[in-house]
View 1 (tube, rainbow, N blue to C red):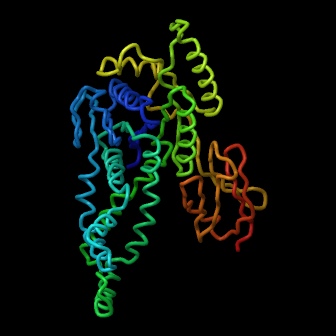
View 2 (cartoon, one colour):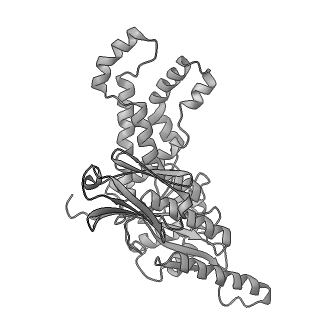
Length: 396
């Protein structure tokens, strides 16, 4: 609706144990204390959000304070409700192909499928009109990247699995039934597939809209944690997600002057300089090591005050567009942000209206803008974390 402010979505992720649940809970509480209708969700399989808030959380949203609710998403139950009919059909197909029952049952469930329904819940909350802010405590970084890549991956999977519509199916199914014993998907299966598509529909549009959704990386000043944060930033950028800040957590405060911690403080100073240099120009939000475990609302409020210093926690802390297209002299250029990426880590390909980009273990099919779809690629270069693919001015 015109004039309606979209729900702000903020996702926190980081290497396991860096304190992202604390930061997510503190951010949600900070938003709620500003009078914003806020829900904090946990997609981390090892749920600890309820422990941080000292509230029993489950698969339904429950009140924490007047404006704050919390929820630990139970994706497995949602998957069983939404995928069961499709799973039974796939089971029949695999059995027809000679796969034994146990293997057929396992093959009928796509790995990571349950996480799609966590995404569907995020979409539901973001589009329901009930909330001003949705804060998401994501799983560790590798799980988060897999989670956020699922709309792209599963969209292609489902198109290959169910390439014909119900109307075509009514014509083809009787013919197939006479020619082969292959189980044919009936209207019930296609209806279930449509419901699944409906759940996927719009997820990417919400999460990849930088004006609405931001990812914030939580790190500790440690070499391995920073290295993983670099990779996460690369992969999130590949899939078009906007990282707007880095939270540097568990920094030794200045008042710690015991000689025992001197080497540790020196390392923290060195690693913080690395974080600020490598993730520039994004802001680095610093959070000192807390004197006590930050559990409960009072402790989390203090974390929020320290983290944001009275600033709006829902603000878009840095702006950017991971994928851009523009005219370039006589031709055109498509630019993709791929921070921390070396040339030998990138593979490129072209398939019809899509540019295929692979970085490490992840591949993204970038749908080309209309102006580029019929133009041949003339070159590509990677410079300072930006991939530029050039297209000829004339159409092929």
